[in-house]
Structures are given as C-alpha cells and as structure tokens.
Length: 258
Figure (cartoon, rainbow, N blue to C red):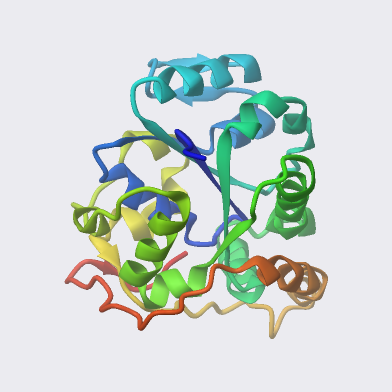
C-alpha cells in the first residue's frame, strides 16, 4: 500500500527535530511540526501554511488532507501527552503510515530535564508513545516501524536509506544536509531546537549534563519507570542489515543531538 501521509511519533528530546529537518529539505514533502501536540497542550495550532491559528482537530485533519492531495505529507509528533483522543479519527489515521523514533531513555530524560526542570514522569513520553504504537498495531493492523535514534546519530545516511526503503519513498542524499538556521514550522518551540538550527547535518556526539539519571533521585525514578517500556517498544526496531554508510559530516554538524 502506498501512503501519501507519513507520521513520526517520538518521546520528546529523541532527535525527532533533526529527522524532521531532513524531510524539510525534500521537495516532495510538506512538513507539519507537532500540530496535534500543540492542539493537545495549548489548545491551538499556529499554522504557517494558512498563516492563522487552528483550534479544532477537524480543521487540522482537513488541512493535512488538503496538502496530501498536492504532495506527500510528513508530520512529527512528540508524546509528552496522551493521544487516545485521536483514535476516534480512525478513518484518517488508517490512511497514514505510522513510524516511531525512540532514544534510550537515559539520554532523553537528561536532555528533557536540562530544558525543563519541572518535567513530570508522564511528559518523558514513552508510555504515551506505546499507547499510539499499540493502536497502530492492534487496531489499524499496520506493521510497526521503530527507528533507533542511536542508529540515526551514528549512521544517518544508512538509517535514512533503510527508512525510505521501508516506507516506500526514494532516498534523497541532498536532504541529509541543510543551511543552518530556524525554519517557520518550529517557530513556537524554537528554543528547544537550538542544536538543529545551528547545524548543517547530523554528526555523532553526546552532550554531558550536570544533573542526570545517575545523580538525581527523581530522574532515576523516571528512568526505572520508562526503561521496561522502552525495551518493549524496541522489539519492533528497524534492523539495519547492511554495512553502515559514511555519516554526513561538516563544520556545522550536530555534535550534541537533543
């Protein structure tokens, strides 16, 4: 089955913005950044496509359908909130190819806490993502496609080639690099995307955090809660069977993906 709409579901702070940035460079896709998440968290979606705010889920779905008639659509959602209310839109979501990007929870938790010291256990997002995954697998009867964020960090070209093959689109090498800077689609949350906006591609690296899972009791509890959920999700990991290709590099490559 060929899909005109592809969704990427991810816990926050899991390299999903860099993934979205790759699709921004493609000429055959229109991208939407955390539109359903915006509706769930702040009650509106400030659409750059219409230059106005959308306040209803039905308006957003109509917009996505409209763009799917003229191009492929890629939308990325972070799972700091539950999305069970979306399951009522079965007809729409049945026509979407759902994919999942997951990072080892220690890295996700450390990065999230650095951005928001008040983050809650639920906002880490793995339980909410599992709920979406189970809906896709059990109700929509779709194959579950899970991408390991570490594979993206270590071998971005190889991972994207495998992903594109899996979802049935052509791999575009030109999309693996970009000009540094912000993009309109993430203006509301641009403070969370500084690493990607200052980059020109993806490069292996790891940021160190003063407060982390290993020295903070609250974060350690978050980790113990989410680790088995992460392990459950990763049973559906996309396997990279070929030798990894050379990663995209450059002076402005992302050195600390967050």
